[in-house]
Image (cartoon, rainbow, N blue to C red; front, side, top):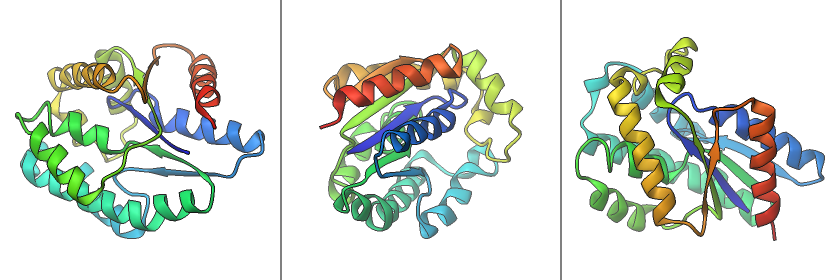
Length: 203
């Protein structure tokens, strides 16, 4: 099973992905936890180009190409081999992030994103969990981390609000695989809902 966690910056995706992996391993499943951009050596090198530096470093079109290049490496070297081996793969972000970040909020580029995705990637997660929370609170949390990977947070609050709207639209478009999870609560409560959604979808 291939599971993605999505949401705006600072919504707790990395924490919830880790807690989900731990819970599923505790239940006896073989789990691979990965992330985007990254998840494979080449993709991690591209990650630094995308998440560090000035917000205006790249155009949205260039970002789409860079994210897709990283995603293709991730797909070839991590996702497909582990799914073929019968493992559960959990990724912190996948193609939905590109649909929202570049396709919906940085110009009317959704058609470009979907076209390149169809040609270069050609797969979707079995289940996508969208962690939904107040953009102002999420942005404060994301910036407080001081991770050095703040390029998208540096676009500011209006950008984060547009991202949230984009993820809501995505959940409406793909109700078969997307679940909205209230991420404005204690991590343990969020984790319980995340695990319940996954358990309901497991074959």
